Length: 414
Image (tube, rainbow, N blue to C red):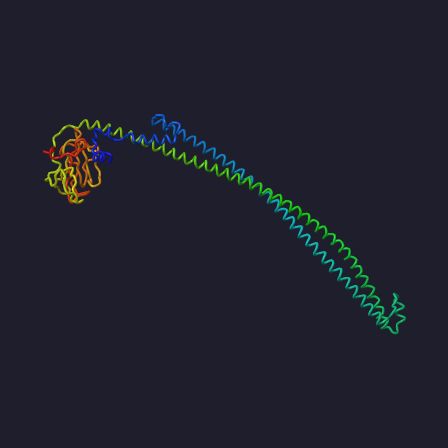
């Protein structure tokens, strides 16, 4: 492609080293290096020095990356400590809340027991009142002024039935009242104990509530402090994340720059080697006689003409030979093939460099019989006639150029 462009633009391959702007890439490179390495932008440097300096700069960025990663690791450790402290404080509050709940449950149980004792006390007091009322009723109905002595009750009775009734009434009043009074005494003692227990439970619950409130206040204070520390850690983490990402990105850019420069240097060395080799081979070209590139008749001559496809007048830089697809196309004289490729409107094209800065072009081919760098002799088949590119039918477009300038091919042909 490069050789074809040189040919089409009127560039002589013998003068290629003078006409190709080989310093253009170097100028762009130096500008880039001056931007990347300001301290050395005004100093002339070799490619190796520039690449070495880029590697040193990349190593500095690598150190920045490692430093940023170390700082981020420390910040993550501090962050974990903050989170652990908050969790510990939260667990303390949870423990106090559990204590408070247990105290509330004990308090509620004590209050329930106290209420039950009060209800039992009232129930027994009611039973005593009922028995006393019943005894009074019996006393009024059967015997007023009844004594404790059962014998007197027996003898003073009118008959045995009345005596038994009196004795039974005395026993009932005496036994039930005594039993119930004993129960009442026990319940009063238990009631007093439960009232004291409920009061103690109430004091415990109140104390735990106060302690819980203090713990919660302390937790809120710790949370506020930890939140400030966390916010500061987040800011520092964001800053170091930026440093880290920048260092990584700059390392990538420098690495890409080094790879591109090494590739460019290798490409330029290969191009220089190829040019040197080609120059050496061009020096071996002999001034052989010329032959017709195609046996057909010339159907279109060198000069201005109406283009058959584009429809306007333009310069015809060569001559057209009539041929059929598949007919051989031969080298007009000895030379070296410098182009063999598809090239725009020319279609498949071969360009041969000859002695005395002369080159020939063979266009609209359907195939190649030679490749770049082949040394071909006059009359040797280099391609096959076709109709590729801007073509109305099978033919050979043939050009001759002197130092890149199109000339009339007829004056060179036999």
